[in-house]
Image 1 (cartoon, rainbow, N blue to C red):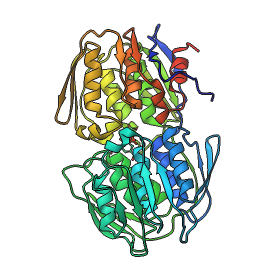
Image 2: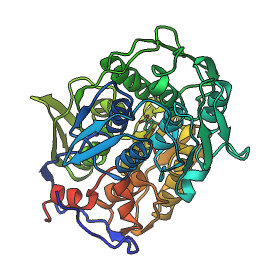
Image 3: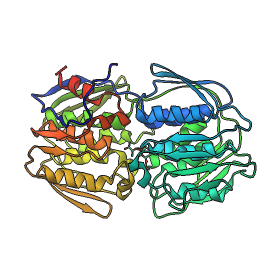
Image 4: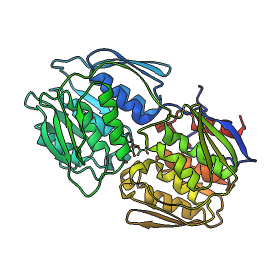
Length: 433
Ligand SMILES: O=C(O)C1=C[C@@H](OP(=O)(O)O)[C@@H](O)[C@H](O)C1
Ligand SMILES: C=C(OP(=O)(O)O)C(=O)O
């Protein structure tokens, strides 16, 4: 696929839909699965292959970081071969650029702690405000040397030592499920394994933790998750494998929602019959908001009439979908309430504030609550739509723009975080390429 180039300095004029859609959208691989498979492959007992890998900023940063730690990652199209990090005491200093990728900044500190040398982590300016403290505290509790200047955020340096054996550790993962996933992915390589307990008010994005456990088990790791908020990982080898990545269902979301906004049909091939991706909730959400959804022979078919209904929904398990559902809700015939997503204030940007500000700028009515948003539909008008380096803000602007003329999405190139060619895919869905 050739990426459509667009000057990131220019706002992108979001196209309106000229009529009902009739599109097949091939969605690239899941960011979350690609980055888990890459980490597990880099820690495995032999070379492995990740097929259908996503090649976007977050996954390229992960590949680069694993190379810095000593793995080889050979990217041939969407099939990536991984030769694991050699065991033994590596020397030299290592710097890891996390960009704005939560999966890189939260998954790799525990991997770095398996080596005795210092590994320095930093990222984009926006990444320096994303929560990291609980992961760094848990690593310190396990005996890892962590230097974060007392900030609990990027930048920081992590250094392992033979003293780091694993064992029991508590973590408050109420700000991000990635804290748990990051400790689990490396846990089998600790001599004593890991008994990890979440101690905090709530745990978001449970499907993503289930995804971590499922990918670990498939690599032969023994994980006991039979008790709520507790995960026990036995020490052992991680099996080298060939795996295939599912399409990214959260990236499919704006395309599926487009069928409801514009009317017509959007088909997504490769939709899994069962999945740990939070996008597995989409068919139900789309039905509740006015769509007709069916899954036949691995293709999800979403049909809309242009009528969109409001929704009252707890998205605690799928915060990643919130910007898209909020955008859809602005075009509904009744108000919506999105609950359980206070933690998305710590995503790429404060997503509750960003959505409220930008939808209000378009003439919409949005109230921020302690854990979500209340959206009351109003007639909208065109305006600049700021994206705050957040790929899902950009796709939210595009979705509203299908119906509201004159939306100028600032820095649409930010979508490259998880989609190499969003603008091209959107144009081809609309039949304008
Ligand atoms: O583990 C993962 O791959 C992810 C977990 C979730 O993070 P939070 O639990 O911080 O929401 C999700 O929002 C993010 O996009 C990807
Ligand atoms: C929250 C997200 O990303 P990250 O993996 O950087 O946390 C997201 O993709 O919506």
